[in-house]
Length: 125
Image (tube, rainbow, N blue to C red; front, top):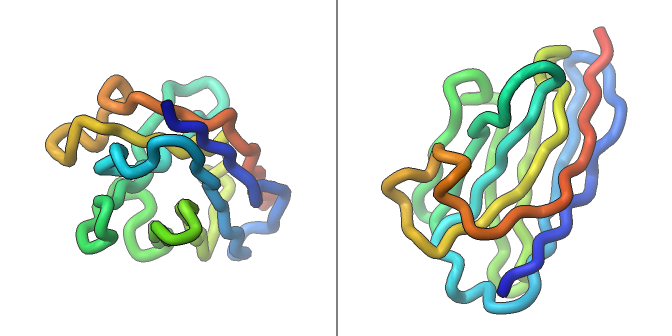
């Protein structure tokens, strides 16, 4: 089992920045891919970014490319999502997730075995 706990959410003005953290515990060595998803109000949960175990490969949703950066520290068992130039449409509950299944379907919610509890990000205009 793997446990994930997010932190770092909050209220920020448009154009500002936040860094989300995801602390992992348990059998983290089995989690090949970590991802970040978000659930905007009135919409379905959507893919934001993903990163491989080594950190050498990343992928982003088009809506956040160039603004968000995903990273991970395997020594600290912590993942990060640096969010810059935030927009009101980035408002959502953000979740970190991990999967033992690999990279192929990294953007699919159903591909991930483990989920954090979520952290609220609100961007005011």
